[in-house]
Image (tube, rainbow, N blue to C red; front, side, top):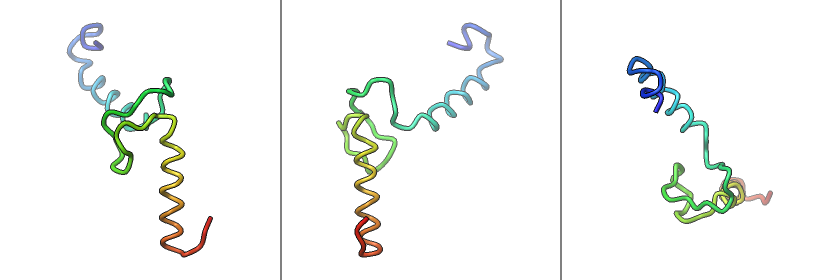
Length: 73
C-alpha cells in the first residue's frame, strides 16, 4: 500500500517498517477475544485467546523457576 501511495522507491523503507512493527507487536492486540492462529512464540498453544497469553506465560515462567530453584514463587 505504501508503494502504491508513495512510489516504488519507498518499498525498502516500508518493508523495514513492517518487519520492525511485527517484531515489536508481540501478542497484544485491540481484540481480546481474538484467537492466535499461528504463534510467534514456540510455547503458546494454538487457539489460545490473546488475553490469556500474559497469564499463560507467567505460569510457564513460574514453573521453570520452581524446577530450577526448587522454591515456590
